[in-house]
Every structure is written in structure tokens, then in C-alpha cells.
Amino acid sequence: MMSWDLVQGWLTYEANSPLLFTQKYFWIFFGLVMGGYSLVYKNTARRNIYLFLVSLFFYYKTSGFYFFILLFSTVVDYFIGRSIYVNKVKWQRQTLVALSVVVNLLVLGYFKYAYFVADFIYDLTGIEIAVQNTFALWTNQALGTNFIFEKILLPVGISFFTFQTISYSVDIYRGHIKPVKNILDFGFYVSFFPQLVAGPIVRASEFIPQLYEPYKVTKEQAGLGIFWILNGLLKKLFLADYLAVQFIDRVFDNPQLYSGFETLSALFGYSMQVYADFSGYTDVAIGIAMLLGFTLPKNFNSPYKASSVADFWRRWHLSLSTWLRDYLYIPLGGNREGSIASYTIVFIFFVFIALIVGDPWLTLGLGAVFGIGFIAMRKSPVAARWVNTNINLMLTMVLGGLWHGSSWNFVTWGTLNGVGLVVYKNWKKISPWADRSKWYNRAIGLALTLIFITFTRAWFRSPTWDGAIAILNKIPTDFGWSTVGEVIASNYKYYLVLVGGYLIHWVPSKYKGQLRTWVSQSSPYVLFLLALASSLVIYQILSAEVQPFIYFAF
Image (cartoon, rainbow, N blue to C red; front, side, top):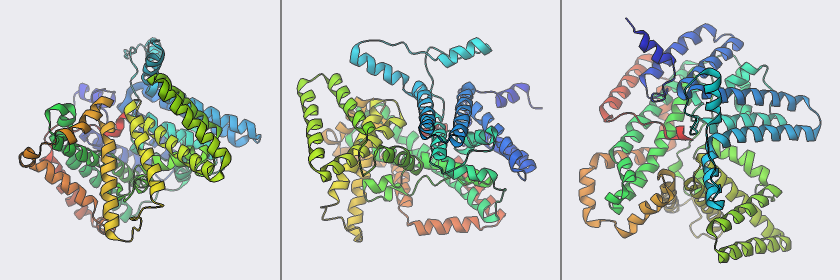
């Protein structure tokens, strides 16, 4: 007989056991969800309410009482969206959109960037600001809970659902969508559990029309959904977790103990790990949503096939890249013109750098750069367009880096990718290797792009800025040529899985499409055997506890 303690554990939040796709408990949960879904799916209103409540429970199991933050964002943006739609006065509509953006960013900023800002102010002025979790303190006082309020814990998925609620208000303002019929429908859009905590970021204009469409899943769609689930789990458990546990984590934890060749191997391994981990999550999310009758946007398109940095960002984390393009880059002026916002941000950024470094020569240099750029833009329309395009591109990438995390590591990572994009945009105009119709030009571009992206991953993975420098410094100063054979021999399974991962990634898309078609059209017996075989492979390869999804931290 099932014990009450076990049932209570299933129904209550446990900080050390969040609800993950890789847990047996999640699939029990999903089976129960599908059982209840079979009773309500024919009625769109009841279906939406049911999935909203299920999604709230899922988020509660993942983040505890932080689901109140999700509810707060839902309520605020629902009423702001309705007000924008019914209001015909332009400045009032603009004020409402600004209110939505400010409120959402304040919530995101408080939970994600409070320590970063406090540390920055301390480094700049010496003023120490005590940071405490006011939300947890209020909850303890109101409900008698015992949440830790001495520090702020980051709610899982807050960066994702914050961007979704912002897109809702902006899309209504732009006339791309009409408001949802009721707040429960909007709550369902914001909290849809397959993609809630790690994306993809689903725009209101893409998802909300699906709320009112009848449930329709063909046999092929169901088969394709199962394919995506199995594909995602294999990526995560067979590839990402294995690489991390067997090699990557121990190298990054103690880089001083390893040679340059080992740190280089760990960097290329991490490039594959972060891709397999994140795309694995989104594959599972897309498959689950497909079985429920909903379509989520594609989030990856074989990014390591990219032959340039620009091509890479057209393939990597598409829901974020396109969101930043449409809701940040273009409003800043895009590749046409600058804006007061972009100039102000650049000026403030220069001032901050000058104050932090405290070098008068650097201050003069930054002032000269700003002044020369201003004069050139006034004298030449061509120069003005060049400066505006690159400023807006750099700002978008820097802010995109900051979206990933509240540290100078992520600012550095975003800045480096911005520099890479700017250099590529200008180099391709004169490059003798720009003709991508030649296979060797594509191969050179692919290799250089992968090396550059992997190089920037040092700041993405390392816990500190100095740690990233230490990792990279190992490669030229202590490569360890004499031990390369021994390292490969003692870690041959790691290298086989790593090389195999890249080779599979580079398989032409048409063959992968044929495999998806074959699986989607297979009989239920074949699908069952595939699921069983996948489970056996995962069971055999696992040698440690399942690792949390990397993008849960964002």
C-alpha cells in the first residue's frame, strides 16, 4: 500500500527534487495528465483551464511558492494587454506598453540581477548594499512558511516567461494579435508546462491563436512527437550528461590539474554538451506539446554546421535570437538608424568602464572614440549607418549575454559574440573565401566558427572571469604534447562519444528528415520497440546521477 509520506512527497515542493523530464516521476505525472486530458480535450475552454492548472502544479513542483511570481506577471500583463487594445490614444498605448516592459524587467531584475547590481555599486563607490529576499520575507510573515530570506534565489524559468509576457503586450500594441478571451487562457499561454522553465520562448502571436483551435493530432504527428521526446532524452542523457560526468566537469572544476590538450578537449566537449542539453530539453518540450495538440517553434537548426558567426546565430536558440532581433535590435534602430536609447546606453557603458578601471588614459581614449564617432556620423551618412548598425548589433549581443546570467562572464561572452558578428559583417565584403558554393570555403568557415564559438564558451562555463582566462591560458602555455596519446587512451570512451556527437550533428539534414518521417509513420509496435531500446541504451550508459538542465539556471 502506498504510504502517505510518498504521496505527500509527490504533491509538495522539494527543493532537492525538482520536476524534470529526466525523472521517472515526471513521466508518471505526464501519464496522469494525459489521462485527465482525454476527458476535456474536446472542449477548448475546459482544455485550457485544465492545462493551466496542471502547468501551475508543474511550476510549483519546480520552484515552490515562486509560482506566485508567475501569477503576478500573468495578472499584470493580462490587464495591461486589454487596456492597450481598447485604448485609442497613441501616447497612452505607448505608456501602457512601457509599463508592461518596466514591470516585467523590474521583477526579472530584482530576482536575477540584485547581487550583480549590488556588487557593481560596491566596486564603483564602496557602498555596501544588503540584499535580502523581500518576497520570501513577506511569504513567511503571511503564510507562516520558512523560506530563506537572507539571500535571493532565482526562480526557475523567469527569463523565459518574462519575455513571453512582454511579447504579449508588444504584439497587441503592434496589432499582431487581439487580447485573449479571459485571464485563464492567458495564464495557460504564460505557464504551458512543456516549455515553461527552459523554453523555447513562445511569442503570443504564435501560440495564442492555437488556444482556440480544436484538438487534432494525426497518427503521424503523434509518431513525430514520440520521436522528438526520444531524440531529446538521448541527447540529454546519452550525450550531454555523459560528456559532463566523464570529463568536462572535473576539468573545469580544477583546470590547474590538467594539460592544455585536456582543457581544449573539455571546451569542445562543453560546446557539444550545452547544445545537446539545451536542444534535448526543447526537443522533449516540442514532442510533449505535439501530443497535447500544440506546436512550439523550432529552437535549433544544426548550429555547428554554421559557416560564419552570423550563420551560427541564425541557427542557435532561435526563439531568443529572433526575440532579441524583433523586440530589441529593430526598436533600437536595426541596421538603418540609431536611437536615443542606443546612444544613451553606449555613453553610460563607456562612463561605467572608465569609472571601474580608473585609468585617465582609458577615459580619454573612450572619450575620443565617442567624439570621433559622433563627428564621423555628422559628416557622412555612410559612416552614420555603419556606426548605428554595429552599435545596435553590439548592444543586442551584450544584453543577450546579460539575459543568460548576472555576471561579467556573460557580459564578456555576449560582447565577444557581438565583436565576432561585427568583424564578420565587415570582413565578408572583402574576404577571398566568401564564395560558399565551394566546399572547402564552407569547411574553413565551419572550422573557424566552431573554434571561435568554443573559445567564447570558456566564459559561459567557468564560474569566474579569471577561471575562463586560466582555462584558455593552459592551451598555449602547457599543451602537454607528450601526454596526448595517454590522455586519449585513458579517456577513449569520452572521445568516442564526443566525436560521434559531432559526426551525427554534421549528417545532412535530408537524411535526418527521412529518419523523422520513417519514425512518424511507423506502427505503434515499432514506436514501442524504439522507446524500449532507447531506455536500455540510456540505462546502460548512465554512470552517475542525472545532471540538471543547464538552461534551468537562466
